Length: 273
Ligand code: FES
Image 1 (cartoon, rainbow, N blue to C red):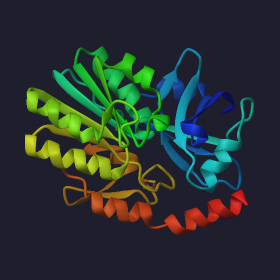
Image 2 (image 1 turned 60 degrees about the vertical axis):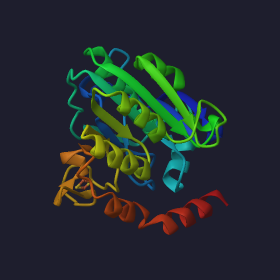
Image 3 (image 1 turned 90 degrees about the horizontal axis):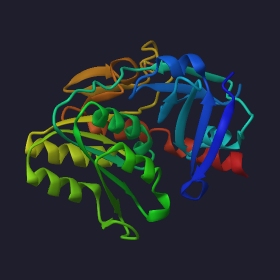
Image 4 (image 1 turned 90 degrees about the vertical axis):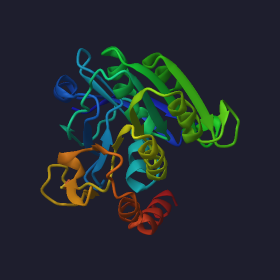
């Protein structure tokens, strides 16, 4: 079970794609849902939203960035190796509806999460413009897939090495100024989702973001994934992972995400040396 059938390295080896045998999950999963994976007995549990599912083949695809010990452990797994546990599908599926003009904004590995949602929104008849960004050209992922999943793809790099020189929010603003945008879906680093939400609030455009906070059990029992949405405590694993971007307490989320940063880095360094 959970054997890796395909493996790709992207972004100079810092981002890994794994296609994994998980027929029951592949059959039930919908865009926006996530799985919790564990590499082996010593590994911690990591929540990752699925980038692709293939019910006929019985596989799911995850794309992750190598940032700590556990993702470094994931990276060691090769085609033919297996994850010890893959639990899911978890979380609520994205509510896909025909609304008209939609902008999908993705940054970093959030682009992978955005992929099935973008495709789903296009398939039901929305006019979908997708904006993806990265620090530099080499760090962009799945550009061709995102082009196929949308009607129009715009690319941004912070250093100007490819596409628009600047942030995804610059391009988003231009499209918002053209008018008629009914929905924005933003998935990526928390500062990016915060910046997108601040802008769309001014334009009064509904905005969905996908949160990936610290999760432990993924079933609503431990409270590890609590986030504040519109002043109320919610659990990202069962109430999310998607929420109204205008209601998220991003500062609290960032504090919680950075709470174990030092330990994470030390653990990663110890593991790599
Ligand atoms: Fe434990 Fe959500 S991960 S409550």
